[in-house]
Length: 174
Image (cartoon, rainbow, N blue to C red):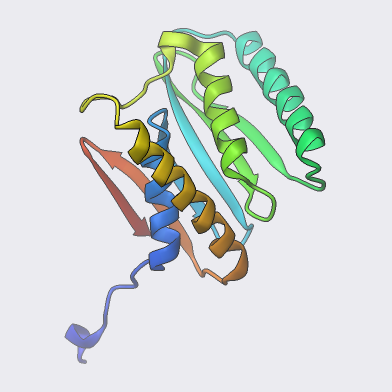
């Protein structure tokens, strides 16, 4: 009866800041999704080119070995990571799903560096406005680490999605 009184469900501000910060700090990440039911964060990387199934299998092994080594060095146990690929020809998406309980800013940096090193210029990165100032990126990384810590302590409901839209970052609930 009073539909105008119904309010759109707005994303949690801390969770929104986390997703937006990931997109700002890591230009190779095209979208990021947080699913409260699974407690997983999904990063999507866009690739442009032709790839074989072996290319992705080799990359998945490369990531699994690297992340396992990183977890061993950082003494992170019980971490969950899932990798999958959507598409093989033209533009395809590499999706990395990671549990929030043990995710660190260092691991996010590692994942983006692994993708950049392995795929090179086939990895689509958003540098339209040039490289951000190094001090700004360091401040964003500190802020990102704080957001990750806050997310572990709060209960977020629903599913949040952050995407790039030209020079903007948009976060919405789904």
